[in-house]
Amino acid sequence: MTICWCGSSDLIPFGSGYGECRVCGTLISLQKLSSDHALVRDDETDFYGKKYWLQHQCNDLELPDIYERSRNDISERCIHWLNTLFKYRLFPAKVLELGCSHGGFTALLNKSGYDAIGVEMSPWVVDYAQKTFGIPVFVGPIENLDISRGSLDVIVLMDVLEHLSDPAATMAHCLHLLKADGLLLIQTPQFRTNMQYDDLVENGSPFLSQLMMDEHLYLFSKPSITEFFHRLGADYIAFESAMFAQYDMFFVVSRIPVQGNTPEQIDSALLGKPDGRHIQALLDLRARELESERKLFESEADRMARALQVKALTSMLQDVELDRAARGEQIETLTSMLKRAELDRAARGEQIETLTSMLRKIEAERVARGEQIESLVAGLRALFARPIFRRLAGLAGWSEVNKLAEWVVTPDE
Image 1 (cartoon, one colour):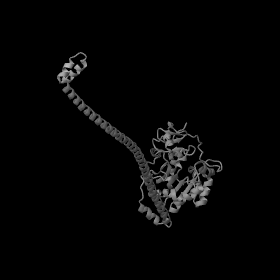
Image 2 (cartoon, rainbow, N blue to C red):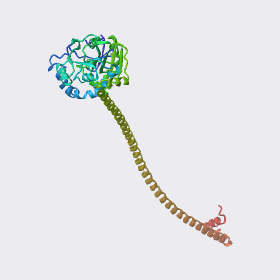
Image 3 (cartoon, rainbow, N blue to C red):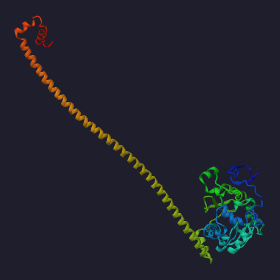
Image 4 (tube, helix red, strand yellow):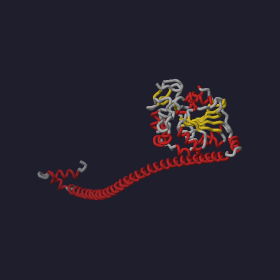
């Protein structure tokens, strides 16, 4: 049974290798690992040995190996961490970096005026850090080192907390090593409240890269890390901007209220020591780099917004052009129909004119025939008006003549 640091075993399945604690909200690896999983007795075979820093980092995680990181980290993440440490604790101060890797940040701390030492689990990494940066580095775990209780001002853990098999015990030990006003400076992946595994997969979330169940054993949220340190007696946490905010959180922990130093106080401290201007120059370079990145990001965002606008306008233009073409076709069709209608109208006009002309001729003929009939009727009337025709009409065999005479004499019938 997997038990959370808070003592609960009530877990909600999260993906195939993790469970989310219903009590504190921490994401916990379900991988069954031994308590000495992090120990390095043989650098050639143990998990966190030499191969972890070379083949595993490059081949499995697609990250730079320790050689490349020892060159590139100082000007990026190490400066970011140092700038935050200046805000909460200026030198001189005794600092221990737990999980110092290549030792670049520990070396930068010493250059800045701190009395800093490093701790790593791999003897090979310890030897590499000592030779590369000339700094004091010791083989852990920290619980085995001879460090006096209440002797340290700061303990730094960068991407370490999530690897601890018993984070409560290790952090309790670290707090014992700190002075009453001592600080923990921590960077660790952030499991956000209400995260759903299927949603992360669907959206391709960067946080998926942190789900390494044989390495990242505890992934805290801001509420769960606050509760975690509250139970250890460290109630004061100040969250800072993480360099990789898409999946990390970065914060300072103390047992007493933390107070920040002003930029003026930091500049004054740096100018008061020989190497201070070099450190200040690195900070300034990093600030200018970040400002350039910010401007580039804004420019790129504006470019993308304009590209989307151009795409939208192009689509609208294409729609208008299609509509214009459709209307053009419709106009051509209507024009053709109108031409045919006009031709038909003209043909019908000619036909009407022809029929009208024929009607006029017929009417003229009718009138002429009417006049002719009237002339004949008038002649007949005059003829039948003579007495002799009246007597003849009454003779036998003249019946038809008699009928005609009656019709002529009485045309109304």
